[in-house]
Length: 177
Image (cartoon, rainbow, N blue to C red):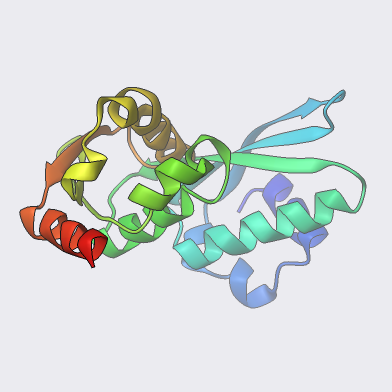
């Protein structure tokens, strides 16, 4: 853990147990950009691997709480040196992508947030009903989803829709009852 990152962890009041987590051993702050007018502190972190979702959420919460005390806002992006990921971790971050920013629009979020995803090469495969396979989502929302995942440390994905006939049928039956 770099000294600057350690100072930030002290400021956030991060527990010793979390500081000793292997995911944070090589953590460092690549740069900080302070936007004086909007009072946004933009952190760029580097980690060895994509963080476990619990650590990511703890970092997000700590930054949000600490910086709001002074009327500021903290946002951050992560670069992971190794981008290997399990499907379980991908699924957790996929859901987190809808919590703020461009993916939080109600229409997109309601249709996409709870779908199953997987990685095949550089593609993020999103499995869903026929209702999600619309040009509007492909053009306007899926590129934003890929960018949001990149901010979490994932590689640049190309999002692909995989229609699931069983999900389409379930949705149609639910609509008609």
